[in-house]
Length: 482
Image (tube, rainbow, N blue to C red):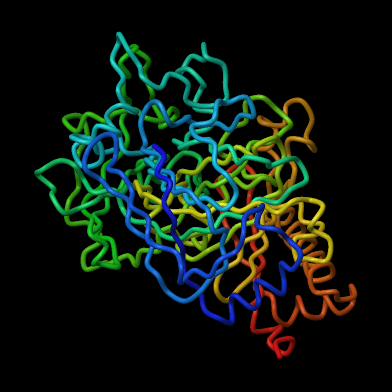
């Protein structure tokens, strides 16, 4: 799993200068510093199962990184994933040093909507989804009780998360920086669909639309399957067919009248596939991670669905290649997990999901110690911050720290209390504080700038803890660059 090779990612001179100025005084956690042009490309071992290989990170421009780094590889299998929850008590899949690179395979939790296209022939996916009346490789699926009527974990959390990754030296109060260097689709392993990859969208019972339908039957859940180009040469997804969910009996004999438990393999002999849908439609892909986050400190088992101050299921399509995220560390080692990869999603994720598909990501993970934060843009940061090439994005939630705000039943109460209004208020307060602390503005200056230069949007209305994002372009501060 380990490969001690050096790697780098490029960035424009202007962006590097901005980063150096904004993050001045924040250490990269030891080691001498070398120019990226002096570092070689990583040589990465093949997957433990199959022949899928991570891409090499191309050289482009210069970026200061620690001179001694390792590139780790974490395949997706029943031994490296946890399904539906974060936990501070999980054993780490790997331990890395700050500055290291990590290639992480991620599987969609909805691959069982079309087993032939998204699981069959793929040893990693088959190992995760294996479930017969005699054996279930990944038993717990969610943070609920193991004896729940609908299945172990109760589906109180649905995402297949690879990890966690323990970052050596990370302590509460530090900030973890996660750079997304690359991501690429997991090819279909079924020879029948060679060269293709697939994803699935479900208009589900937790979607915003479920009780606001106009056509019969009402209500209903509908799964739509999309096709992608596995080589990444096509920048759009093609709708193939859809079908309505029908009651399904799992291998343990439990009947699921609705999509209430993840990983239920659909028998396509029992559903009616409707082909020829969405004719002449091409959905532009914008690949991203729905879930990247750290383990919270407040509970031993935390549902993967509601996002919070340690990140998690933010479902922002901007969290893709080239983005950088900053997370406040809550527990020793940070315990970073990633999953819920999407090929495309609109702001709001209205019907309940995106185009849920399996992707592999390449990350660099850095650590900023709490004693080095003062005077940097990361000072006072106690929520997830997103940086793209051109923008800063702040994420607000109905309850920014719901585990601490809603009492002992927080993981149930959050699904009953969310609203766009509360999320908007939190996004406003966060962008105000960001401008005041990171840009040294007065409150009056910040408020004026927010009204004339910040775009607010609905991130999602389906994850229990609803989200709003506030975006400000870096060009607003172009006058600072001399």
